[in-house]
Length: 261
Image (cartoon, rainbow, N blue to C red; front, side, top):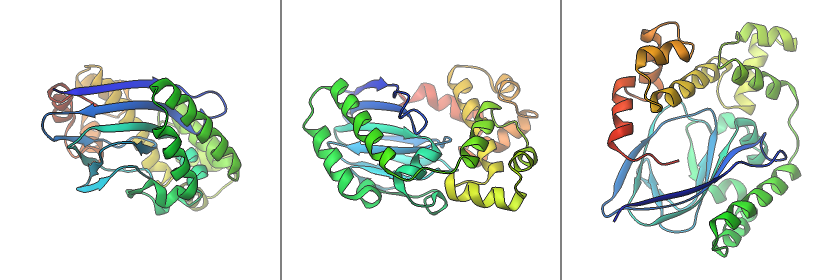
């Protein structure tokens, strides 16, 4: 019997700049289930409480990492259960306390980055039976831990907000000029706090919006226009770069395989 159950929670104002979504989940299938996971402008923290999930062929019970600019493969072969936190890049930078450029396209056990705090958090979540209470507890623990970490300077968060607000359309030169920075300095700070260059981050934001529209059933030609691509050829280029396949192939997969969070 196939099972995919999820309960979602939108974090409160104290956590929302750092964690965009919290989801309690359980999935189990009669046979191993392989999926393609597509990149998005953020990072994932999985607090696993049951069977491990294979990511890139490596089994992890709990895992995390930085932003990715490429698709990856996952495999669920047992009863996987836990809590997923979707982190903003700046939330990941503050939570992990290491330059995000060191974590780009990297997946590793969550405990390796978060240490004793993570062990305690995972144990407390495992003792909590109710999904809603798990999400409440996860929010409290993440909020407390993130706010114990050093704050970031305001410049890159401001630039990131401009990119998100314009759906990746604001020019990188205008961001540097507004901050009074050189292009080189802006790229260096983005590499430290986001893990991508500003240009790649803008492309990732457009790609992520295009993915949402594609999931909603829009044809690629309309997706290209709505997501701010110059034309469909540019949409195809970015899908091949970030998803490893053209948008038509990606869209066909949405209907062929049940999608996780």
